Length: 303
Image (cartoon, rainbow, N blue to C red; front, side, top):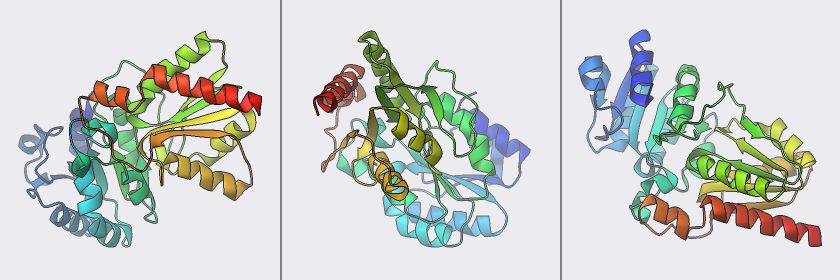
């Protein structure tokens, strides 16, 4: 099933679920006819939508809200923090076209600080599925959680068969003594291909689909730091506040260290273009990921 079909089935089984949108129906076009009054479109009013969702949650509903990730996480941030976060309400925030998925859109529509912003809210869960299959596998657990949650909606199709989602746990694709690739969301596919390239060159390579960035699988990350020579973090997000920052927090807290090379956006927004062009220009193709990983690994051998 795809995202819309899965959400529809969940809503049919649980009348508490209310689907909302700020005039963004790309993934939920067929739901108004099915849910009737349990489908609410507030128009291009993200703040109003979050306020209404909080009110519904206070009355026992489970609102699942949809908007462009950039506007949902930034335009409505105060409402998310104050109405949803402080009250700790089970509102599910679905951010459409996050990160590089906004490809041809300019900086105003690029959600590349969303993880940093949302994970700073106490009690807020943050998820970044690798593709639509991963999203579908995770969705029931996310919806049924009593906590507020932000989902980086990833509608990209994939034939990859993901493991069953266990709350707060990662999906370990492989373990590696030399290099471990840590990634989430859209860049999982290219990281998987980069792993194959590196293995062809003789490296022992681990790959982890983090899926859940909050809660984070801290125990696994500690084990990886102790067992691999180099970690590469790969994310379509600003360097500050994302996965690289999460690792730094875990390492400092547990007084451990491991060489880490971050692949992220550094102090600038990405150049808009078609997705494949964005990935090439920003050097997130499988070949470039493998190239950076090999170069960094060889550099730590010299040291």
